[in-house]
Image (cartoon, rainbow, N blue to C red; front, side, top):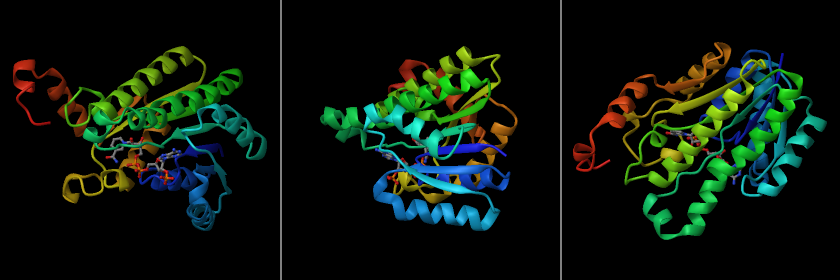
Length: 247
Ligand SMILES: NC(=O)c1ccc[n+]([C@@H]2O[C@H](COP(=O)([O-])OP(=O)(O)OC[C@H]3O[C@@H](n4cnc5c(N)ncnc54)[C@H](OP(=O)(O)O)[C@@H]3O)[C@@H](O)[C@H]2O)c1
């Protein structure tokens, strides 16, 4: 049994992931914004009822960057040593809006990248001292090549990918796994109204792939796996073709 902290626990992918982790007998701390306290409490009760594991709730807001390290300390005081942490919070606002509103772009960057650096970086220091732990965060195929339709979100995810890669390198040999998950379009509130549902993966399938990747100590996964090949092609398209595509 391990203690898992899920940051952004109301996310469409985090909900089934929490179930996967609880089904393995782990204790779960569901963390999200205080505005969602009812939803978080219900999710915790559901985990307890389904799997008989202890599930707690705690509150953070990713834009309150200066509070994040103290938040992790509080979770360890009240919930116990964090053995595994998932950063699932994220925001994808329309590219055109972000292009015109720097304040909104900066806020999104704080949620997608800076908060992850603060929360995971602080947790990593604790894990490093204990020489054990799992760290999981979400990159995205959008971070693999800059495209006009979403390069501000993509840049956040590319930065997070590099942060996780560096953290993995730093922690290599210290019995800490660092997993970057790159989901293809998945049917969650983030993609609501963006593509037909049949082109999107089911969050339950994505969560199952993530849980398996944690078990197998993988480093980077695309889920569904076909996105690795799709993005390999897109990354290697020559500029004279790429610039003509409406991506
Ligand atoms: N869905 C996809 O197609 C897809 C593809 C590639 C990567 N991803 C990434 O995978 C992760 C999970 O995505 P998802 O689709 O499950 O997302 P989602 O359902 O839209 O959920 C986003 C989560 O982020 C939280 N959040 C937003 N702003 C926050 C803040 N200021 N403080 C704390 N939490 C905040 C939300 O909390 P509230 O409930 O309080 O708003 C919610 O729990 C994200 O990092 C996303 O970028 C998703």
